[in-house]
Image (cartoon, rainbow, N blue to C red; front, side, top):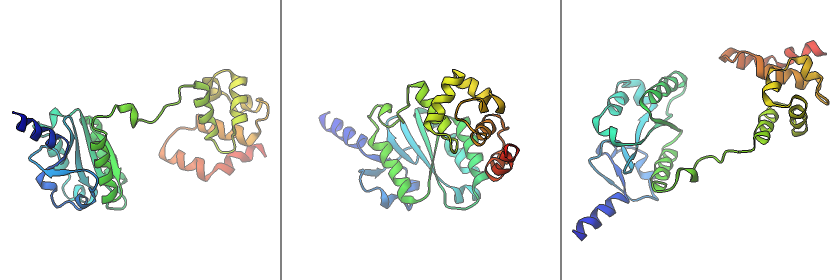
Length: 228
């Protein structure tokens, strides 16, 4: 019994790799984590309830049904964390990534993109390394102070500095009023000139579409002319 327990413990400390991934070019880059080929359902089992499915964009373009079959396997149901690790090995992948994003959202997977075999291997090793760590250890530390977060949001607008953001929040009282303010109301805020007012108003009021996002960058000077 002790021997069996030791064997189980040793196996659980290793990264388990599906036989179909044996010749994957990323395998030689897995250098810091012990691994073994095993008859597991996912491509990489990084924890008792955590796994990684690997997908090359090039392969997906040739075999679009493959990933759906892999996700739908009965053995995948035991995993709480399921990561789809996508290797970007083609250009012009926007449509494919949009499709894969929809797929992971419907299937309760986490999408991770890598741009090389070494990077993909590091992601897999990191998931294995943090197998028994609390989620908060690798989660982004969210700022809890509202005014600081609001200030960071406002200063992300070109030419709006921290003093401007503090003035805006004091003047309007809350972030919601800043976002709903007209250009005239923004201009009435002390120290805020026409350029900053226009950029803020454009950010909060222009309809967010792909074309609109492009227009904000390309036609910014045209938007400001009305104040010249």
